[in-house]
Structure formats: C-alpha cells, structure tokens
Length: 86
Image 1 (tube, rainbow, N blue to C red):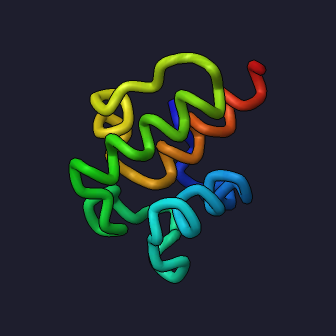
Image 2 (cartoon, helix red, strand yellow; image 1 turned 135 degrees about the horizontal axis):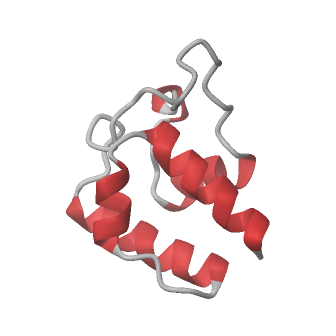
Image 3 (tube, rainbow, N blue to C red; image 1 turned 180 degrees about the vertical axis):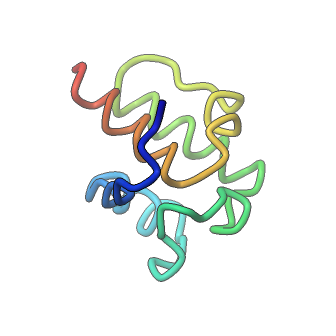
C-alpha cells in the first residue's frame, strides 16, 4: 500500500529532458501530481514519447502503457524503475 505521507519523487532529469527538449513541454508544468493531459501530452505527443522511451530502453513502451500511467508521478516511477533494470 502506498505511503501518502511520502513526498513525491523528483522528476528524473533524463525524463525531464525528454519532456522539455523533445516534446517541448513547459518545465513549470512538470510537477508529479500533474496529469499527462494537464502537461499537454495529447495523443500525438504520447506516440512520440512512446518512440523515445522505446529507443531509450530498447524494449517496446506502448502508447497504452503511457496513457494508463495517467500522472507525471506514475510516468516518473515507470521511467525510474525501467531505467534501473537496464
């Protein structure tokens, strides 16, 4: 069960870089509680992020997987856990 008293993890610098430089997301929007919609990840941006993450991890990261994460905090946790596996 998640500990809601724990602070949200900081956005991984490499993920932040992908979002800001590659997808042109405003860095001020990159707070863990933000939804992917709120930071501007429309369907085209999700496809682009899917391609970037697939290249990064050399394993498929589907658009459905990204969309299912729903928040930047969840995307960050996914990114962090996946990057630690490789």
